[in-house]
Image 1 (cartoon, helix red, strand yellow):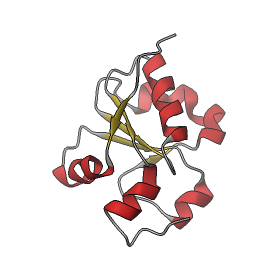
Image 2: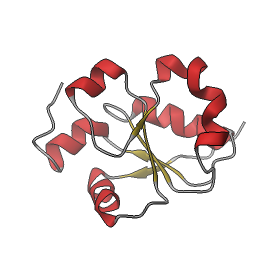
Image 3: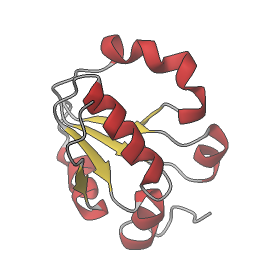
Length: 115
C-alpha cells in the first residue's frame, strides 16, 4: 500500500484553480448529498464516500489518473481518505483541500453557508 503523504492545497489556492479556467483539473467532493444541499462549490463532481460501492469501479473511466485532482469535504478528513485511496489506484497528482468547504466559506467565499 502506498503511504506517501498526501499533498495539501489551501482554499486560497483552490480559489485560484477554480478561476484559472484550466479544464484539465478534476474537482471531486466526497460529502453527502444533504451536505451539498446546504453548501457547494460549482464545478465539483459529487462522489459521496458512503456510496463508494456505487461509484468506486467507475473511477478509472470517469477520471484521468494523471490529471491534477483536487478533493473536497467538510473539514479535510474524508477528502484525505479519498486522496489516499486514489493514490492507491494509481492517481499521480491528487491534492487534499485543507480545511474543506468550511475553510473555503470562512476565508474565500462567505456567501457559502456554514454547517
